[in-house]
Image (cartoon, rainbow, N blue to C red):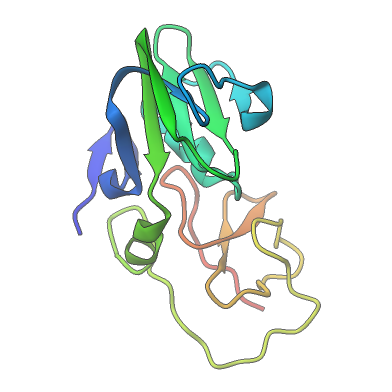
Length: 172
């Protein structure tokens, strides 16, 4: 699997799929009129579509994203049924998170990610849960996750490392 590099950050194109072509489409729930604020979390000031996608990867419940480049507005869709419809709206993009691709991504080595290694050790209850800070425990309860170092202050249990992180795998 190949990765694309844009503005210093890396994403797997297969992790996100455009909904109804993606361009000039606003994400919706069960119908084009279903835009309940309960379906998503708004993040502002993101500089690119890639940054919005990365924010989705940091949200365990993310089903997809809506992004408007001119304003940097990013909606992280967490609706349990996912994005089921779109509406034509100029300047918006709608992308669904392709969770099936995460297995491939987690085991693919690129210049900015670290491959997962499987260990046979039993993880103790003193390890951190998925997506939690593991700076002090240096281990993750879920064997599909590793403790990746972001910087000297923060490490997180993740399946793969973000390109702007230190990416050292922390171990006890």
